[in-house]
Image 1: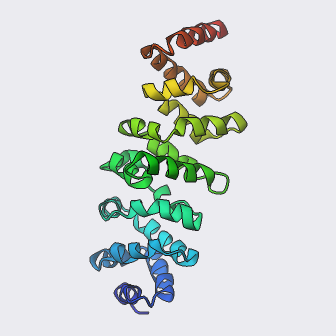
Image 2: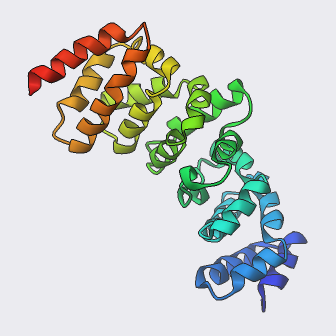
Length: 252
């Protein structure tokens, strides 16, 4: 193999495992291979392989695209070519969450809400299904919690994430174990009224929230106290807000 161009040609002609190994090596060197990859349609060629069920091929493709996504302009290309929409397939068939997405802080990407829609699907049914897969993979893929947090930081996505019942799944996990990114995600989700209504319907939610306020972790205390005033804007939760407020005052 003598160039990125010839390697891409081999991959396009379905001759590819050795060519993918070569591409991964060249892309990691940061020696101009990225520009050559871009000019010869590397994203479109490799994205066709994401629908395969061969875990070795998928892993190589994700590794290559992960290196590619380190560049902001390249991330835009990944988004516009619709690569993110293949992620639920990868999660379900291969059991790997998108290493490529771990390199991207969605909050600072253009069209960030559209990126979330691409990841989770454009219907409530797909939304719930893909969130379930993502949550299910958390024990094996701890970086998934960071991806959830990145999505929750997008204010325009909070209503969309409500459809997935994400607040319920996160709460159930946090009852059993501490998870930094899921804790922050929960508080961000509570900025959305319908998530607050759903949250106060969950058993033992008070204990979970009070544990944050009384925590020794100052980050948790700050975000919990900053979240508390949001409860006053909802008739269902206003009484809860008052009770929690008096409890916080009594701690001082």
